[in-house]
Image (cartoon, rainbow, N blue to C red; front, top):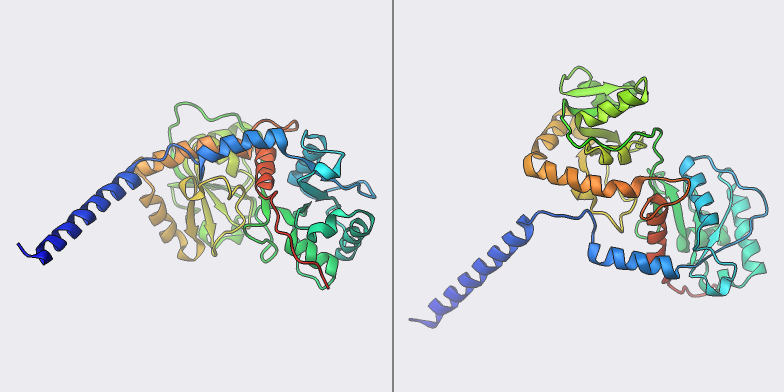
Length: 350
């Protein structure tokens, strides 16, 4: 036999082996909603033991416009990560109220720069701040460094153009209700459930109003009704940029969230932690009801059951508690901050 024949045979065998291995890897169902559960949990324990944060003293009482901001700030103030010794801190928190002007924020940074040495060591790269709406780009040196270097914690969904992926962090929304846990035996009655106060603002939702497979309504009359809606729906619909406060409850109830958007989303909560593509269906708003139904139809059988199960596991991270609990919203946000504790040392200004 010729050398060419053996070369072709060897290539065929290698390709067959690669195809077999690839099929085995990708056909194996996921059992975890995490990007890497083998690193998440050991690192989380390390964070609990070692993470230290220094909070600059605000010169006024702070107020916030959103429940997520308020819960995060109150939890941060009382958490064991806070240290009174800035020399042992991994990160520094710059506090200011929601309604403060951009000029005043610049003065806050300027004061910290002049009174303490920690900002100038990294030009703010080991600092973080809380701003639900997010900060824009300004010409003031203090604001430039804050926006460019420091970690912004904002609300989800973030204002367009005011969130820097891979640096900034989005807070998960606080649920407007307190539904109990999902029933063990869930029977679905509706393909999709959408809850929104102002239905006329969405052309897609208006297309679905008269479809018997979808339940479209404003706020349910009581908590029991809302619980029944979640428990009896296969998918829960959320429009990106609208009310997404129920996304954690949807996950908890095994109602697979469907996020309807007209652009790529880069500000999802816990993007360093969760496999979002495995717990949520993303649908382009431009395709209308036809595209939505096609996407939901493609997410059926074993695929749907897997997404539902992974979503239930991930739902613990969307729970806000008055007193933080392990792996809840506050602790998972803190874990993302901990991942950012090794900062880049930016060159000083000339």
